Length: 144
Image (cartoon, rainbow, N blue to C red; front, side):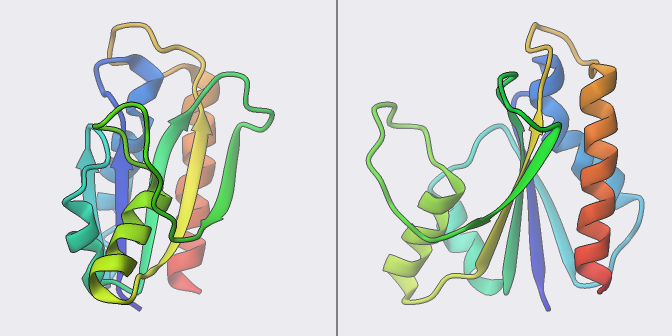
């Protein structure tokens, strides 16, 4: 199985950059068949990028009100219009891929609860612990 993992967020806003951290840690593992990418945000160009993969895993920070330290959810293709023109969700990316190419990879979103979104480049201990758990979940998925 060919997998793309995209970690995204603002790595200048402490916990919001946790997706980048997950990608950096996964890169140290050199898992076969996996492509790793980071981005400030999801862009329309990803609809073309994801086309060649069987699965895409998205990793992002979640708002502090999230109940769990992290969540995993299946992403279904679906394209929506948003009030902010530069905002795209994982479902939008897969939906646009489906619309343009007639198929889309399966999608999974890992949301890691952020606690500190102030300016900086450090992670709160709880967010860093949740990221470690997500990394292990991704490794299990990809080596099963």
